[in-house]
Length: 134
Image: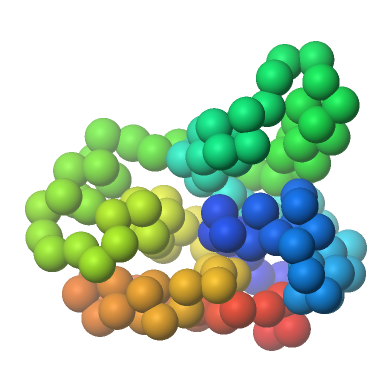
């Protein structure tokens, strides 16, 4: 089974159950062992910041439970320096891409076009998709 990286926007879709696509993604996640799911530590920060999650709240417990089932990749100094070393279209997407390329085979994102642009400047074998039906 392939290692799958979930972009921040996919995590928001899942956590907020934003639309019918989130239900498809949630069903797809149930078929994947948690050991094969990856996110970046940057995504955790963004989720807690944007949703204003407070320690001990119901949302905190729910999100913590969800996140502890995944592998969290670090946002390292080398990733950060590589991200700023050449042109970028969306800096956050570039950081996510760089976090994923060494460990993952697939990136699931709503920003397929942006990630494919990044892939042209930093080639890899990673596949970029917008759903878990791969």
